[in-house]
Length: 453
Image (cartoon, rainbow, N blue to C red):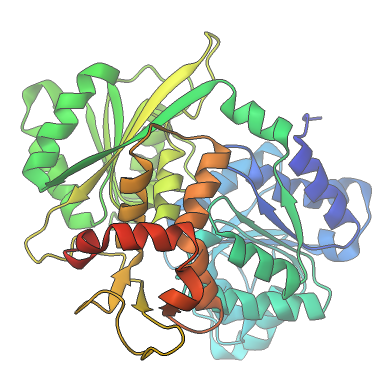
Protein backbone atom coordinates (compact mmCIF):
# COMPACT_ATOMS: atom_id res chain seq x y z
CA UNK A 1 0.00 0.00 0.00
CA UNK A 2 1.52 3.32 -1.04
CA UNK A 3 1.62 6.24 1.37
CA UNK A 4 -0.62 8.93 -0.07
CA UNK A 5 -0.02 12.65 -0.04
CA UNK A 6 -2.87 14.65 1.45
CA UNK A 7 -4.16 15.91 -1.91
CA UNK A 8 -4.11 12.35 -3.31
CA UNK A 9 -6.19 11.09 -0.38
CA UNK A 10 -8.64 14.01 -0.70
CA UNK A 11 -9.04 13.32 -4.41
CA UNK A 12 -9.75 9.64 -3.74
CA UNK A 13 -12.23 10.37 -0.95
CA UNK A 14 -14.23 12.85 -3.03
CA UNK A 15 -14.41 10.57 -6.04
CA UNK A 16 -15.47 7.63 -3.87
CA UNK A 17 -18.33 9.84 -2.64
CA UNK A 18 -19.38 10.52 -6.22
CA UNK A 19 -17.93 14.04 -6.44
CA UNK A 20 -15.91 15.06 -9.48
CA UNK A 21 -12.69 16.95 -8.82
CA UNK A 22 -10.25 19.49 -10.19
CA UNK A 23 -6.78 18.81 -8.82
CA UNK A 24 -4.24 21.64 -8.62
CA UNK A 25 -0.74 20.67 -7.55
CA UNK A 26 2.81 21.51 -8.68
CA UNK A 27 4.73 19.45 -11.19
CA UNK A 28 6.30 16.25 -9.91
CA UNK A 29 3.96 15.71 -6.95
CA UNK A 30 1.97 12.71 -8.21
CA UNK A 31 -1.24 13.97 -9.81
CA UNK A 32 -1.44 10.92 -12.10
CA UNK A 33 -1.53 8.57 -9.12
CA UNK A 34 -4.20 10.75 -7.52
CA UNK A 35 -6.42 10.25 -10.58
CA UNK A 36 -5.81 6.54 -11.11
CA UNK A 37 -5.94 5.25 -7.53
CA UNK A 38 -9.71 5.70 -6.94
CA UNK A 39 -10.39 3.58 -10.02
CA UNK A 40 -7.92 0.92 -8.84
CA UNK A 41 -9.45 0.72 -5.38
CA UNK A 42 -13.01 0.44 -6.64
CA UNK A 43 -11.93 -2.45 -8.86
CA UNK A 44 -10.54 -4.20 -5.79
CA UNK A 45 -13.01 -3.23 -3.10
CA UNK A 46 -16.23 -2.34 -4.88
CA UNK A 47 -18.03 0.94 -4.40
CA UNK A 48 -19.13 3.50 -6.96
CA UNK A 49 -20.23 1.51 -10.03
CA UNK A 50 -19.73 4.49 -12.35
CA UNK A 51 -16.18 4.90 -11.11
CA UNK A 52 -15.17 1.29 -11.64
CA UNK A 53 -16.80 0.52 -14.99
CA UNK A 54 -13.88 1.84 -17.05
CA UNK A 55 -11.41 4.71 -17.08
CA UNK A 56 -10.58 6.97 -20.03
CA UNK A 57 -7.43 8.99 -19.41
CA UNK A 58 -7.32 11.94 -21.81
CA UNK A 59 -4.17 13.90 -22.67
CA UNK A 60 -3.57 16.93 -24.92
CA UNK A 61 -0.58 15.41 -26.75
CA UNK A 62 0.46 11.89 -27.74
CA UNK A 63 3.95 12.09 -26.24
CA UNK A 64 2.56 11.85 -22.71
CA UNK A 65 0.71 8.56 -23.20
CA UNK A 66 3.60 6.19 -22.53
CA UNK A 67 4.35 7.68 -19.12
CA UNK A 68 0.72 7.32 -18.05
CA UNK A 69 0.64 3.74 -19.34
CA UNK A 70 3.59 2.95 -17.06
CA UNK A 71 1.68 4.38 -14.09
CA UNK A 72 -1.19 1.97 -14.84
CA UNK A 73 1.28 -0.90 -15.10
CA UNK A 74 2.50 -0.09 -11.58
CA UNK A 75 -1.03 -1.00 -10.46
CA UNK A 76 -1.05 -4.17 -12.62
CA UNK A 77 -3.60 -2.67 -14.99
CA UNK A 78 -3.19 -3.00 -18.74
CA UNK A 79 -4.08 0.31 -20.37
CA UNK A 80 -4.68 0.58 -24.11
CA UNK A 81 -3.21 3.60 -25.90
CA UNK A 82 -5.49 5.09 -28.54
CA UNK A 83 -4.53 8.01 -30.78
CA UNK A 84 -3.74 8.67 -34.44
CA UNK A 85 -0.52 6.64 -34.42
CA UNK A 86 -1.79 3.90 -32.10
CA UNK A 87 -5.54 3.36 -32.64
CA UNK A 88 -5.66 0.28 -30.44
CA UNK A 89 -9.00 0.72 -28.71
CA UNK A 90 -12.23 -0.95 -29.88
CA UNK A 91 -14.79 1.85 -29.45
CA UNK A 92 -13.44 2.77 -25.97
CA UNK A 93 -14.80 -0.49 -24.53
CA UNK A 94 -11.61 -1.66 -22.74
CA UNK A 95 -11.19 -1.37 -18.98
CA UNK A 96 -8.51 1.35 -19.20
CA UNK A 97 -7.90 3.61 -22.21
CA UNK A 98 -5.33 6.36 -22.64
CA UNK A 99 -6.27 8.70 -25.46
CA UNK A 100 -5.80 12.20 -26.77
CA UNK A 101 -8.34 14.91 -26.13
CA UNK A 102 -9.23 15.26 -29.82
CA UNK A 103 -10.16 11.56 -29.91
CA UNK A 104 -12.25 11.97 -26.78
CA UNK A 105 -14.08 15.09 -27.93
CA UNK A 106 -15.02 13.60 -31.30
CA UNK A 107 -16.12 10.30 -29.75
CA UNK A 108 -18.19 12.25 -27.20
CA UNK A 109 -19.94 14.00 -30.10
CA UNK A 110 -20.47 10.75 -32.02
CA UNK A 111 -18.16 11.90 -34.82
CA UNK A 112 -15.04 10.00 -33.84
CA UNK A 113 -11.82 10.18 -35.84
CA UNK A 114 -10.67 6.57 -35.65
CA UNK A 115 -13.72 4.40 -36.40
CA UNK A 116 -16.38 4.13 -39.05
CA UNK A 117 -19.55 6.18 -38.84
CA UNK A 118 -21.50 2.98 -38.21
CA UNK A 119 -19.88 2.70 -34.80
CA UNK A 120 -20.53 6.31 -33.76
CA UNK A 121 -23.23 5.38 -31.25
CA UNK A 122 -20.99 2.79 -29.59
CA UNK A 123 -18.02 5.14 -29.25
CA UNK A 124 -20.19 7.99 -27.98
CA UNK A 125 -21.83 5.77 -25.38
CA UNK A 126 -18.48 4.41 -24.24
CA UNK A 127 -17.05 7.92 -23.94
CA UNK A 128 -19.94 8.79 -21.64
CA UNK A 129 -20.24 5.71 -19.48
CA UNK A 130 -16.89 5.88 -17.73
CA UNK A 131 -14.71 7.66 -15.25
CA UNK A 132 -12.79 10.25 -17.29
CA UNK A 133 -9.55 12.04 -16.45
CA UNK A 134 -8.49 15.21 -18.27
CA UNK A 135 -4.81 15.75 -17.53
CA UNK A 136 -2.44 18.65 -18.37
CA UNK A 137 -5.36 20.81 -19.47
CA UNK A 138 -3.18 23.91 -19.53
CA UNK A 139 -1.91 22.61 -22.90
CA UNK A 140 -5.35 23.13 -24.46
CA UNK A 141 -5.74 26.28 -26.50
CA UNK A 142 -7.20 28.88 -24.12
CA UNK A 143 -9.55 30.39 -26.69
CA UNK A 144 -11.25 27.25 -27.98
CA UNK A 145 -9.79 24.07 -26.47
CA UNK A 146 -10.71 25.05 -22.93
CA UNK A 147 -14.19 26.10 -24.03
CA UNK A 148 -14.78 22.66 -25.55
CA UNK A 149 -13.63 21.09 -22.31
CA UNK A 150 -15.99 23.32 -20.32
CA UNK A 151 -18.93 22.19 -22.46
CA UNK A 152 -18.08 18.51 -21.95
CA UNK A 153 -17.58 18.99 -18.21
CA UNK A 154 -20.93 20.73 -17.82
CA UNK A 155 -22.70 17.83 -19.53
CA UNK A 156 -20.82 15.24 -17.49
CA UNK A 157 -21.77 17.11 -14.33
CA UNK A 158 -25.43 17.26 -15.39
CA UNK A 159 -25.41 13.49 -15.99
CA UNK A 160 -23.53 12.79 -12.74
CA UNK A 161 -20.56 11.15 -14.46
CA UNK A 162 -17.31 10.97 -12.44
CA UNK A 163 -14.51 13.19 -13.73
CA UNK A 164 -11.10 14.40 -12.63
CA UNK A 165 -9.42 17.45 -14.18
CA UNK A 166 -5.75 18.12 -13.40
CA UNK A 167 -3.30 20.95 -13.87
CA UNK A 168 -0.38 22.72 -12.26
CA UNK A 169 -0.52 25.89 -14.28
CA UNK A 170 -3.92 27.44 -14.85
CA UNK A 171 -4.85 30.76 -13.27
CA UNK A 172 -7.51 31.27 -10.62
CA UNK A 173 -10.13 32.49 -13.09
CA UNK A 174 -10.17 29.08 -14.80
CA UNK A 175 -10.14 27.11 -11.56
CA UNK A 176 -13.04 29.18 -10.20
CA UNK A 177 -15.01 28.55 -13.39
CA UNK A 178 -14.45 24.80 -13.11
CA UNK A 179 -15.74 24.94 -9.52
CA UNK A 180 -18.76 27.18 -9.96
CA UNK A 181 -19.92 26.35 -13.49
CA UNK A 182 -18.74 22.77 -14.05
CA UNK A 183 -19.47 21.37 -10.58
CA UNK A 184 -15.95 20.19 -9.71
CA UNK A 185 -14.60 20.07 -6.17
CA UNK A 186 -11.25 21.86 -5.95
CA UNK A 187 -8.46 19.77 -4.44
CA UNK A 188 -5.23 21.64 -3.80
CA UNK A 189 -1.88 20.45 -2.55
CA UNK A 190 -1.57 20.94 1.21
CA UNK A 191 1.28 22.78 2.92
CA UNK A 192 2.81 19.43 3.83
CA UNK A 193 2.54 18.26 0.21
CA UNK A 194 4.31 21.42 -0.93
CA UNK A 195 7.07 20.99 1.65
CA UNK A 196 7.65 17.49 0.30
CA UNK A 197 8.53 19.06 -3.04
CA UNK A 198 10.08 22.42 -2.15
CA UNK A 199 11.89 21.91 1.15
CA UNK A 200 14.87 20.13 -0.43
CA UNK A 201 15.25 22.12 -3.67
CA UNK A 202 16.40 25.64 -4.50
CA UNK A 203 15.57 26.76 -8.03
CA UNK A 204 16.41 30.27 -9.20
CA UNK A 205 14.88 31.86 -12.29
CA UNK A 206 16.91 34.36 -14.28
CA UNK A 207 16.49 36.32 -17.51
CA UNK A 208 18.97 36.78 -20.30
CA UNK A 209 17.74 40.03 -21.81
CA UNK A 210 19.79 39.87 -25.03
CA UNK A 211 17.92 38.26 -27.91
CA UNK A 212 19.59 35.06 -29.14
CA UNK A 213 19.44 33.43 -32.54
CA UNK A 214 20.37 29.75 -32.85
CA UNK A 215 24.09 30.54 -33.17
CA UNK A 216 23.94 32.69 -30.05
CA UNK A 217 22.00 30.03 -28.18
CA UNK A 218 24.68 27.44 -29.00
CA UNK A 219 27.34 29.54 -27.31
CA UNK A 220 25.05 30.35 -24.40
CA UNK A 221 24.27 26.70 -23.70
CA UNK A 222 27.92 25.61 -23.94
CA UNK A 223 28.97 28.49 -21.71
CA UNK A 224 26.66 27.38 -18.92
CA UNK A 225 27.02 23.62 -19.27
CA UNK A 226 30.39 23.46 -17.49
CA UNK A 227 28.78 24.68 -14.26
CA UNK A 228 26.21 21.89 -14.22
CA UNK A 229 27.21 19.09 -16.59
CA UNK A 230 23.60 18.40 -17.55
CA UNK A 231 20.99 20.62 -19.16
CA UNK A 232 17.55 20.56 -20.74
CA UNK A 233 17.13 23.20 -23.44
CA UNK A 234 13.60 24.11 -24.54
CA UNK A 235 13.06 25.87 -27.85
CA UNK A 236 9.66 26.77 -29.23
CA UNK A 237 9.74 25.34 -32.75
CA UNK A 238 10.85 22.04 -34.23
CA UNK A 239 12.95 23.84 -36.84
CA UNK A 240 15.00 25.67 -34.21
CA UNK A 241 15.33 22.49 -32.15
CA UNK A 242 16.79 20.61 -35.11
CA UNK A 243 19.10 23.49 -36.01
CA UNK A 244 20.35 23.86 -32.42
CA UNK A 245 20.92 20.11 -32.13
CA UNK A 246 22.96 19.98 -35.35
CA UNK A 247 25.11 22.96 -34.41
CA UNK A 248 25.82 21.62 -30.94
CA UNK A 249 26.86 18.28 -32.43
CA UNK A 250 29.53 20.06 -34.45
CA UNK A 251 31.48 20.28 -31.19
CA UNK A 252 33.36 16.95 -31.02
CA UNK A 253 33.40 17.04 -27.22
CA UNK A 254 29.57 16.89 -27.24
CA UNK A 255 29.18 14.33 -30.01
CA UNK A 256 27.64 11.55 -27.88
CA UNK A 257 26.17 13.82 -25.24
CA UNK A 258 23.22 15.41 -27.04
CA UNK A 259 19.65 14.13 -27.39
CA UNK A 260 16.85 15.61 -29.47
CA UNK A 261 13.12 15.25 -28.86
CA UNK A 262 10.27 16.85 -30.79
CA UNK A 263 6.83 16.00 -32.14
CA UNK A 264 7.74 14.95 -35.68
CA UNK A 265 9.57 11.70 -35.06
CA UNK A 266 7.99 8.53 -36.39
CA UNK A 267 6.38 6.15 -33.92
CA UNK A 268 9.38 3.80 -34.06
CA UNK A 269 11.95 6.53 -33.52
CA UNK A 270 9.85 8.25 -30.84
CA UNK A 271 9.71 5.10 -28.72
CA UNK A 272 13.48 4.66 -28.86
CA UNK A 273 14.10 8.33 -28.08
CA UNK A 274 11.68 8.39 -25.15
CA UNK A 275 13.39 5.35 -23.65
CA UNK A 276 16.81 6.97 -24.02
CA UNK A 277 15.59 10.23 -22.50
CA UNK A 278 14.15 8.46 -19.47
CA UNK A 279 17.37 6.48 -19.06
CA UNK A 280 19.65 9.52 -19.24
CA UNK A 281 17.47 12.23 -17.70
CA UNK A 282 15.38 10.10 -15.36
CA UNK A 283 15.88 9.32 -11.70
CA UNK A 284 19.33 8.07 -10.54
CA UNK A 285 21.02 8.83 -13.86
CA UNK A 286 24.64 10.05 -13.82
CA UNK A 287 24.59 11.01 -17.51
CA UNK A 288 26.10 14.37 -18.39
CA UNK A 289 24.95 16.11 -21.54
CA UNK A 290 22.13 18.07 -23.18
CA UNK A 291 18.54 17.36 -24.13
CA UNK A 292 17.29 19.71 -26.85
CA UNK A 293 13.51 19.62 -26.96
CA UNK A 294 10.24 21.47 -27.53
CA UNK A 295 6.83 21.54 -25.86
CA UNK A 296 6.71 17.72 -25.95
CA UNK A 297 8.87 17.55 -22.82
CA UNK A 298 7.39 20.37 -20.81
CA UNK A 299 4.68 18.30 -19.15
CA UNK A 300 4.18 14.71 -18.12
CA UNK A 301 7.76 13.48 -18.68
CA UNK A 302 9.49 12.53 -15.44
CA UNK A 303 12.90 13.93 -16.36
CA UNK A 304 15.25 16.33 -14.66
CA UNK A 305 18.42 18.41 -14.97
CA UNK A 306 20.07 20.99 -12.71
CA UNK A 307 20.05 23.53 -15.55
CA UNK A 308 17.03 24.39 -17.69
CA UNK A 309 17.44 26.94 -20.47
CA UNK A 310 14.21 27.91 -22.17
CA UNK A 311 13.09 30.27 -24.86
CA UNK A 312 10.41 32.68 -23.76
CA UNK A 313 6.88 31.27 -23.79
CA UNK A 314 3.63 32.09 -21.95
CA UNK A 315 4.00 31.85 -18.20
CA UNK A 316 2.15 28.54 -17.83
CA UNK A 317 4.55 26.84 -20.23
CA UNK A 318 7.58 28.40 -18.55
CA UNK A 319 6.50 27.08 -15.16
CA UNK A 320 5.97 23.62 -16.61
CA UNK A 321 9.44 23.70 -18.14
CA UNK A 322 10.92 24.90 -14.86
CA UNK A 323 9.33 21.82 -13.29
CA UNK A 324 12.00 19.72 -15.05
CA UNK A 325 14.71 21.45 -12.98
CA UNK A 326 16.06 19.37 -10.02
CA UNK A 327 12.97 17.19 -9.97
CA UNK A 328 14.51 14.31 -8.00
CA UNK A 329 15.42 14.42 -4.35
CA UNK A 330 18.94 13.46 -3.31
CA UNK A 331 20.21 12.31 0.07
CA UNK A 332 22.66 15.16 0.58
CA UNK A 333 20.77 18.28 1.71
CA UNK A 334 19.47 20.97 -0.62
CA UNK A 335 19.63 20.42 -4.37
CA UNK A 336 20.22 23.60 -6.36
CA UNK A 337 19.15 24.35 -9.89
CA UNK A 338 18.83 27.22 -12.32
CA UNK A 339 16.24 28.16 -14.93
CA UNK A 340 17.29 30.76 -17.50
CA UNK A 341 14.77 32.38 -19.85
CA UNK A 342 16.07 33.73 -23.14
CA UNK A 343 14.24 35.75 -25.76
CA UNK A 344 14.57 34.19 -29.24
CA UNK A 345 15.72 36.26 -32.19
CA UNK A 346 14.31 35.23 -35.56
CA UNK A 347 14.38 36.72 -39.04
CA UNK A 348 10.64 37.26 -39.45
CA UNK A 349 10.38 39.15 -36.16
CA UNK A 350 7.67 36.86 -34.76
CA UNK A 351 9.81 35.63 -31.91
CA UNK A 352 6.73 34.52 -29.94
CA UNK A 353 5.89 31.73 -32.46
CA UNK A 354 4.17 29.30 -32.07
CA UNK A 355 2.37 31.04 -29.19
CA UNK A 356 0.06 33.34 -31.14
CA UNK A 357 -2.70 33.78 -28.53
CA UNK A 358 -3.15 37.44 -27.71
CA UNK A 359 -5.30 39.98 -25.93
CA UNK A 360 -6.39 43.31 -27.32
CA UNK A 361 -5.66 45.99 -24.74
CA UNK A 362 -7.88 49.06 -25.04
CA UNK A 363 -8.06 52.21 -22.96
CA UNK A 364 -11.62 51.94 -21.73
CA UNK A 365 -12.99 53.92 -18.85
CA UNK A 366 -15.56 56.67 -18.58
CA UNK A 367 -15.38 59.37 -21.26
CA UNK A 368 -12.96 57.49 -23.54
CA UNK A 369 -13.37 55.76 -26.83
CA UNK A 370 -13.22 52.12 -25.83
CA UNK A 371 -11.93 51.17 -29.25
CA UNK A 372 -8.67 53.05 -28.68
CA UNK A 373 -5.65 50.81 -28.29
CA UNK A 374 -3.94 51.37 -24.94
CA UNK A 375 -0.51 51.26 -26.60
CA UNK A 376 -0.45 53.42 -29.73
CA UNK A 377 -0.35 51.46 -32.99
CA UNK A 378 -0.32 48.15 -31.12
CA UNK A 379 -3.70 46.58 -30.51
CA UNK A 380 -2.62 42.98 -29.98
CA UNK A 381 -0.32 41.85 -27.16
CA UNK A 382 0.68 38.19 -27.13
CA UNK A 383 0.73 36.17 -23.93
CA UNK A 384 4.48 35.74 -24.37
CA UNK A 385 4.92 39.52 -24.41
CA UNK A 386 2.88 39.87 -21.23
CA UNK A 387 4.98 37.15 -19.63
CA UNK A 388 8.20 38.92 -20.62
CA UNK A 389 7.32 42.25 -19.00
CA UNK A 390 6.15 40.49 -15.83
CA UNK A 391 9.49 38.68 -15.65
CA UNK A 392 11.41 41.90 -16.33
CA UNK A 393 9.75 43.47 -13.32
CA UNK A 394 10.03 40.46 -11.03
CA UNK A 395 13.66 39.75 -11.99
CA UNK A 396 14.71 43.03 -10.38
CA UNK A 397 14.94 40.87 -7.27
CA UNK A 398 16.00 37.25 -7.14
CA UNK A 399 13.21 34.91 -8.24
CA UNK A 400 13.33 31.73 -6.20
CA UNK A 401 10.84 29.29 -7.66
CA UNK A 402 8.58 27.58 -5.17
CA UNK A 403 4.89 26.78 -5.43
CA UNK A 404 3.71 30.11 -4.03
CA UNK A 405 5.96 32.07 -6.39
CA UNK A 406 4.87 29.97 -9.35
CA UNK A 407 1.21 30.66 -8.58
CA UNK A 408 1.91 34.36 -8.14
CA UNK A 409 3.67 34.64 -11.50
CA UNK A 410 0.98 32.59 -13.21
CA UNK A 411 -1.94 34.63 -11.91
CA UNK A 412 -0.20 37.95 -12.43
CA UNK A 413 0.46 37.14 -16.10
CA UNK A 414 -2.66 35.22 -17.12
CA UNK A 415 -5.57 35.56 -14.69
CA UNK A 416 -7.20 38.63 -16.28
CA UNK A 417 -6.48 37.35 -19.76
CA UNK A 418 -8.08 33.96 -19.18
CA UNK A 419 -11.02 35.65 -17.48
CA UNK A 420 -11.66 37.49 -20.75
CA UNK A 421 -11.29 34.27 -22.76
CA UNK A 422 -13.78 32.47 -20.52
CA UNK A 423 -16.30 35.22 -21.26
CA UNK A 424 -15.78 34.80 -24.99
CA UNK A 425 -13.67 37.92 -25.47
CA UNK A 426 -10.08 38.77 -26.28
CA UNK A 427 -10.42 42.41 -25.16
CA UNK A 428 -9.34 43.92 -21.85
CA UNK A 429 -10.23 47.56 -21.07
CA UNK A 430 -7.28 48.93 -19.18
CA UNK A 431 -8.95 51.65 -17.09
CA UNK A 432 -11.92 49.46 -16.22
CA UNK A 433 -10.07 46.22 -15.51
CA UNK A 434 -6.32 46.71 -14.94
CA UNK A 435 -5.67 50.26 -13.76
CA UNK A 436 -5.51 49.45 -10.04
CA UNK A 437 -3.89 46.04 -10.42
CA UNK A 438 -0.23 45.04 -10.38
CA UNK A 439 -0.39 43.87 -13.99
CA UNK A 440 -1.68 47.29 -15.00
CA UNK A 441 1.22 48.99 -13.24
CA UNK A 442 3.70 46.71 -15.00
CA UNK A 443 2.13 47.35 -18.42
CA UNK A 444 2.29 51.11 -17.79
CA UNK A 445 5.94 50.83 -16.81
CA UNK A 446 6.95 48.70 -19.79
CA UNK A 447 4.93 50.34 -22.56
CA UNK A 448 8.01 50.88 -24.69
CA UNK A 449 9.10 47.26 -24.31
CA UNK A 450 5.64 46.08 -25.40
CA UNK A 451 5.51 48.55 -28.27
CA UNK A 452 8.69 47.11 -29.73
CA UNK A 453 7.68 43.45 -29.14
